[in-house]
Length: 290
Ligand code: ZN
Picture (tube, rainbow, N blue to C red):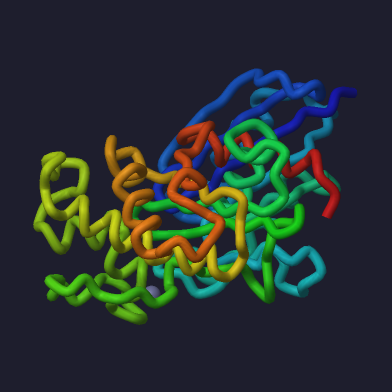
């Protein structure tokens, strides 16, 4: 009997599944759109079963979008809370997977914490104990590691919803359905698209929107720095890929910080694993004790 290591990155729009042997050698990987919860789990588990021999064991690390209960001691461990994604609220992810793989070891984390773990094991945060991973895509999310432990709190941090000051010239109402002009409401990819009337990646390099974006990002990051004093803040997600955004944000960080913090713009870095941080981190969940 063989034991296979499986990583699952469950995202709001796409799901990635990777399978490796016990030595961590990646054997195969697949990605498909995230659909209804049961259909998605069926696709994931059916694919895994097609790659292993009957009787083989698996261990699974899951990096999931949220909100989802990641506290293994909670009664509703592995269950989604209220999410705008149709059909997923209240869905019990772990229970459903266990129907396919009973008695298998399963480790669950938020997608952002898993991506951070990936970066701490194989990326730009190797050897560090205090780090944050920020993803700027359709929304804004952050994973946090404090003194070597991934932070959950009572559910998990929701840094996208911290408050930021408005840019003096910004009259845009914001996109957050709960708070309007919270950080995510003003600085997510969706917010950029709604404010400027076209997708962020189509804005020219010299568009004022990029400077505003960097200014908003710097404000939120400064709050992260003030709260947890990290060695590094890692920028990930689609919007972070814009060529000069890291540098512009680092500049605003230094201006806003006014020399008060030991953290400087140089400590803001792009994800070393790029878009692969999540799936690599999902597999790394099996290499840690909780
Ligand atoms: Zn909000």
